[in-house]
Image (cartoon, rainbow, N blue to C red; front, side):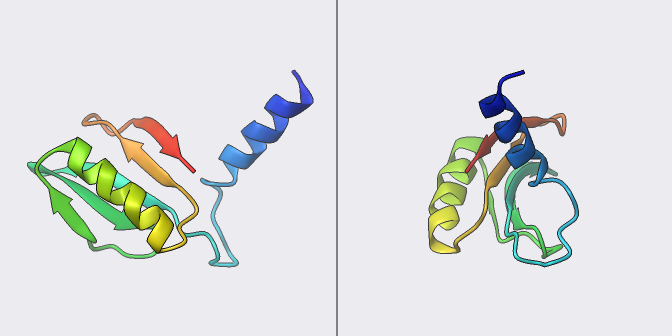
Length: 86
């Protein structure tokens, strides 16, 4: 395994390991009920909800920049990670 690939894997793993310093600010796009929701790592409530996944992803990307978030983690309808945007 190359050194570059190892660094990338470690960087992705840091997105999912519990953050005791509370500096990490991931945003999540998930399908719940009949709509797509954006929620932050610390909040149990949704920040916003949308009818389409594309609208939720576009707004999450905007919030990524505005809220100085670490990453946007997008789940598909089955609850599996579809994409990670940093």
